[in-house]
Amino acid sequence: MKPISRIVAAAAFSGWLALASAQPAQEQLDLNALQAAGVQIAQAVDRNQAAVLWDGASPAAKRVVTREAFVTSLQRSRAALGAVASRTWLGLSRQFVGAGDKLPAGAYINIDFVTTFAEGKTQRELVSLRQDEDKVWRFVGYVVR
Image 1 (spheres, rainbow, N blue to C red):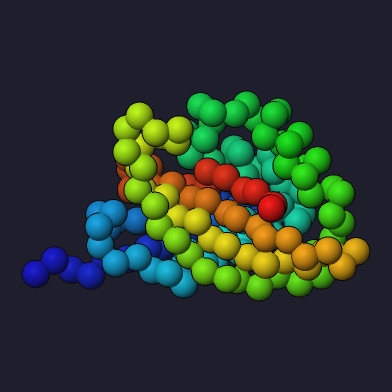
Image 2: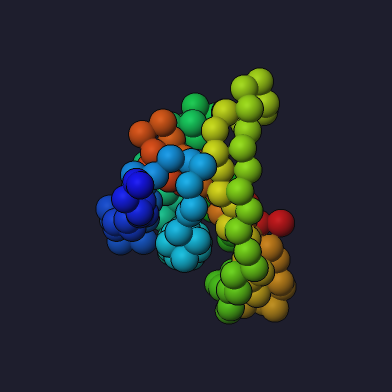
């Protein structure tokens, strides 16, 4: 019987979280660690650390958007909303993308939040992670919708 696999959360910079995983994608995930990673990433966005997020992002994300474009887009999308008044975790969803899709092939986790901003506007935030070839879950996207 295989030893129980684990996901280890390691802070590489204040607010940035990478999830190193020794487990194959088909095994049970540590949902608490993934949810905590989503919170830390959202909080890094709150602190205007888009550049730090991009620096630690999956190579798959870096192939799709430049650092400058990512930082500018993220700052623009959040500036209009103001500070976060509250954030509530809604759930996680797992997605497997095959070759030839719009996204690079692989396993993805989406962490969904409902967030109220200082001006009283409520939006949904989605933080996405991708399990890279080295079995490390890395940041791949953030969107407010």
